[in-house]
Amino acid sequence: MASVTFGADVRPTSPEQMSGKTALQFWADNGIKLGWNLGNTLDAYKNGVGTEGVWSWGGPTPPEASQALFNGVKSSGFDIVRIPVTWVGHIGAAPDYKVSEARLQRVAEVIDYAKTAGIKAMIINVHHDGLYDNGGTIGFLNFPEAEKNATKKTEIQNELGKVWTQIANYFKNYGDYLIFETMNEVHNGNWGVVSDNQAYKNQQDILFDWNKAALDAIRATGGNNATRFVAVPGLGSTEPSYVINAHNRQKLLPSDGTNGTGKLIVSVHYYHPWRYTVADPNSTTEPLLHTWDTSERGHPASAMSSLKTTFVDNGIAVYVGEWGAPTNIRATMSADIKATHREYIRTVAKNIVNNCIVPLYFDDGGNFKLLERSNGQAQSGSFYADVLSDIMSAVKTSSSSGITPSSSSSSGGSSSSGVSSSSGSSSSSEDDISPIIHSPLSILNPQLITYYSLKGEPLGNAKPQKAGIYIVKQGNSVRKIAVR
Image 1 (cartoon, rainbow, N blue to C red):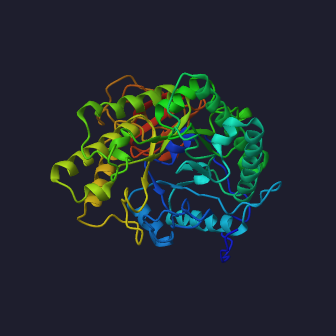
Image 2: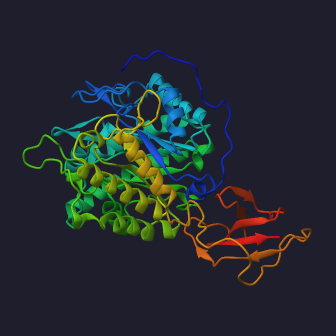
Image 3: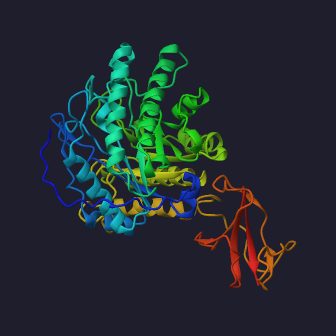
């Protein structure tokens, strides 16, 4: 077990208030549109032990997470952060599989950095404890062994449940801004590539059982964890087609009791095409491509539209927990290659957000670097600053009518029939000035009316008294009204 110096316990001393909202409502009401990953940090490991920022194979070693980093992440425009955590070397022997208190406390410290910075939501997970690397698995989520041996599969499932029981209990008092993600990129060496054969279906079944074990363990701890948002991945690189395939077999989202699907989130990664994003630049057989093939330009739109149709339109939240492309390599290349890279980033970001999905850029401090780890800012005048600007621009110009309610209709005078006031004491009039927009992020009580400012700020259920233009959500409809 790794030795770490204990600091102050920064956890809430009593249960924080839960919102009672679905994940889609939570995105919308908190204006959560864009996320960032603290990559290559708490997910790193050396010699079989999770070691912050240090990898067994070398590579980038960003400094430890700090308050200054997260202050910068917030000021750079990010609403949600994913904090990947590898627990290998911090888990004791059977039958208790005791998780190191020091490891839990360090994760709490990093969560507190994000919370103090004003970031609206954080995600923690079990990350590289199932990493398939160099022909073997790092950590206890040994998928190849589980696939070969039913007894081993059950043993791993039991350990996963006990690990999540401890993590869930440790973070039990946090409000629902703290999200749990069950696992990350678990596979048997094939990265979960979709196949129709029985072997592939068996792999889906194993992951489904493990996701259920993790979810059941979290819910059994009670308190805030009974309704906490839990994200569930698909096999391997958990690309859109992989999770949709599993969902179509009813082997993606476990049953969540009376919560239905409102407290679950589908965790997707998007590294398509892989030779443009994650291929080895030093490979002599399949090297990293430096230009984005024109035949691939339509893929982000079709992939994200499929996710929206399958999940979001049915009230199930989705985030792209990892996406991006290697900035540091292309930062030194020709203007044409840089322009292609920026076009890729803009296209992917815009299509994710246009489909009411939250993108979380994977910043590893190295190949996919975006922000400086010293201050959470993109270096002024750099290629990284250009890429960050492209991401922000894509989000701001998104056509999504969900995460930020659409204001596509022009504001001004009344253009359609009036809507009678539901507040009898009000003397103001209310005019409907836009057509109804059916929004997947407005899956509320059909009788409940919620008012928002034009910026998407929630104003409550009572009609505003001040004259102005407002957005109204009722059931699955969204419209703009003028109060006079």
